[in-house]
Image 1 (cartoon, rainbow, N blue to C red):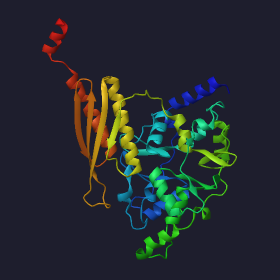
Image 2 (image 1 turned 30 degrees about the vertical axis):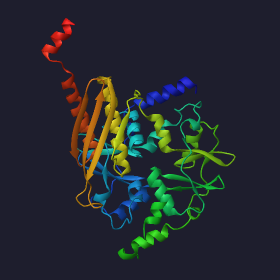
Image 3 (image 1 turned 180 degrees about the horizontal axis):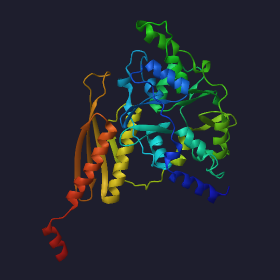
Image 4 (image 1 turned 120 degrees about the horizontal axis):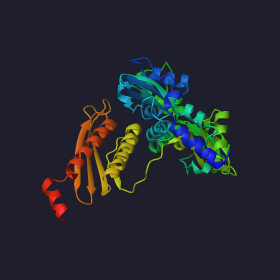
Length: 386
C-alpha cells in the first residue's frame, strides 16, 4: 500500500457512519451490585459497563473501581458517572474523538428515546487494520517515558500510580529492562475479596491483597517491538497476541508504550488548532468527568473563536457541593470568563452532570456574545459615517 493510499483509506474510514459497527450494549441487570458488575467485567473481558437511563447513559469502569476502598461496601449509584452518546449516523472520527477525550473503550449509541447499543474501540481498531500505511512508525503514536514501577513495588503503589496518571498499563522494570506489565484488571482482581470475608475485615483483607510485589502478579511476557516497527505491524501483533498494549524497547530498555488508546488517536476527526490560553480550576477527581469537562470547555472555546476571532483568553472555575461527602454525587457550579480584545464575558451555570453543564454554557455563551456583538442602529449609523 502506498503512502497516498494509506492516508486516503484512513481518512475515508474516519468519515464512515458508526451504524455498521454497532454491537450489543454491555450492561448489567438493573440494580446490580458492584460485585456483580466486577464479575461481568471479567466475564466479557471489558473495562466498562453501561447503565442506560432512557436516552442517557451511565458508566462504571475499571478506573472507577480502582479508586474505591472496598468494592463490596460501595453503591453503584455513588460510583457511576454519565458519558455522552452518539447517534448511529455519527462518524468513526467523532466516535474516536470521544473515546480519546473520555478515555473510553466504547461509546453508547442512542436515539431520542433510548440507548440502542455501543461502538467499541476494539471493533474500530480491527477495522483500522490495513488502513494505517506502513510508513507510519509506532514511535509516532506511542506514549514516551511512560510511568513505570520496579519489581519490588507493591500493588497498592501501582494502583495509586494508575489513579494519579489515569492509565491502565504500567510496565515493570528490572534494572531498566522491561520485564513485565501490570494492568488495571490485575489490580481489580486482587481487590475482590473472597466470599468468606466479613464486612469488618474487608478493608484489611484488601490491603493485604495489595501488599504483594508487582513481580508476583505481572504479565512476565509483555508484547514488545523495536522503535523501527511500523504502527501497522504493531497493531497486527497486538491483535494476533490478544494484547491491549505493546512496549517499544531498544536492547531490552523501555522507550515508550502504545496502547489501544494511542491507536485510537489515528481515528480522531481533524479539528483546527487555536492558540487561545485556556485554564480550568477545580476539576473533579473523577477521571471521566475531569476529562469530559476539559475536552468540552476547550472545544467550546475553539467553536467560539471561529465566530469571535478576537478572543484572547478563557478561564473556567468549577465549584463542587456535596450534601453527603463520599456518599452522593455533588452538584457543580461552573463559571466561565472569556476575555476578547474589546470586551469581557462571564456566564455561570449549575447542575449535577458536569459535561451537561458545559453543554448549556456553550449554547448560552454563543447567544450572549452574539447579542453583545450586535450594534445598535445608532452605532451602525456612526459606523457608516466613519
